[in-house]
Length: 98
Image 1 (cartoon, one colour):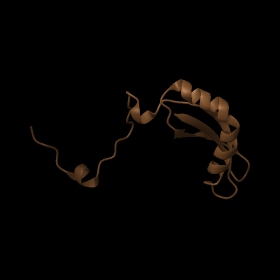
Image 2 (tube, one colour; image 1 turned 90 degrees about the vertical axis):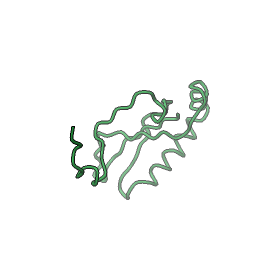
Image 3 (cartoon, rainbow, N blue to C red; image 1 turned 90 degrees about the horizontal axis):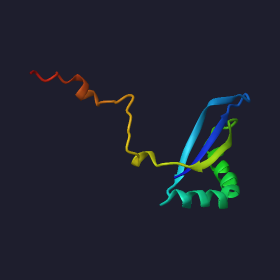
Image 4 (cartoon, one colour; image 1 turned 180 degrees about the horizontal axis):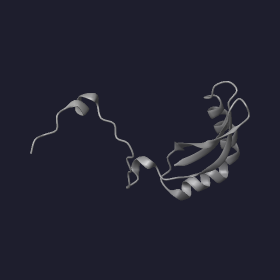
């Protein structure tokens, strides 16, 4: 997948520690993705940056720090759940007796 990594600057001019990653396009092969990035990186910088900047509140700025290719996390084999939320009714239900 096409990976765009953005740095965010707040209205006071401080660059945030967080980096925002956006996966934006699927490719059938890694090679196809790499070729796409090489051929279209200038256009991606202009349009991608403009699109994400339009999503932010006034005063916030975004800068494109990386364009690359990544595995789609939805199809990756390993999944790690740090916190799993349950609906309230499941949380309040009594534990089954043994």
